Length: 350
Image (cartoon, rainbow, N blue to C red; front, top):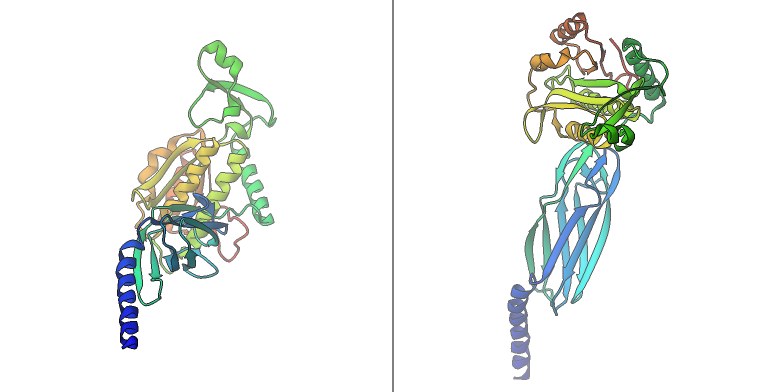
C-alpha cells in the first residue's frame, strides 16, 4: 500500500512539474546573440557574443542552443554554433565565440533554437528565438603582398604620367568650396572665415586626383569563373584603399548588381574615410550571380576628362575590349587591368 502511495506521489510530482515547467520556463528567459563588429574584411576573425538571461525564481537546469551560421561565416570550420547553459535564478551568462569571415557579402542571423529539459529531465521543450543582427564583410585587401605593392606603385606612376600634374607633392594648389565627402583636415579655416563659407585646400599631385574605378562583371561561366571575379573585386577594393590613402578622390561604377537594390552600382567621387567605407560596402553587396547590365549603360559617365578611369575586368571578351578602345580614342585617360588567377600577385595591364 505504501508503495502504491509512493508511486502515485512520484507520478503526481512528475505531472505537476511538467505542467508548471511548460508554462514558466520561457517566462523572463531571454537570449541574444550579436556580432562583435558590424563590419569586417575577408579573413578577419571576430566574435559572436551570446547572452542568456533568466530573471525568475526558478533555475533552468539544462539549455542547449543551436544557431545556424550564414554561409561564409564559420566557427571552427562548422557552419553552426552550439552552446550549453545551466542558468540559475536571476542570472545572466555571457559567452564569446570566435568566428572567421570566409567570404565577402552581407550576412544576417535568422534564428536560434533553444532546447531545455525540465527539472527531472523527463521532457524537453523547444523555442525558436528570432535574431536581427547582421554583418557586412568587405573584400580582402591585397596590399600586404609585396608584388601587389609594386603593382600599385606602378599603377600610381601610370596615373600620374597621364595626368599632367605638378611633381611637387606638397605644393599648395588652390581653394575650393567644401563638399560633404571632404575630410575635416582639408578645411582651410582662415579662408573659410574670410569667405563666410567652408573652403578646403587642394594640393598636388595625388591629393587632387580624381579616380573612377570601373568594375566590369560578366555572367559566371566556364571562361569566367567565380574565383576570377572575386579576385577582380578584391583588386578594386585594394586600388581604392591605396589611392584613398594618397588623398585622391575615388568613385566606383559597376555593371554588376547590388544584392540589396538589384541595381547596378554608381558611386560618385569622394575622398573621406566614410566614402571609402561606402566603396567597400558596395563591393561587399555586389552579387556576381545576378545578370549584369551592359557596361555601356554608363557611357556618359566616361566623358569627364578630370577623372582617370581604372577599368578592372575579369574577362577579355571582344565586345568589352572594343568598347574600352573606343573610350581611349575619345581622349579619356584610362588603364585596363585584367586579373589572372594563374599570376594572382600581379596586375596585368592593357
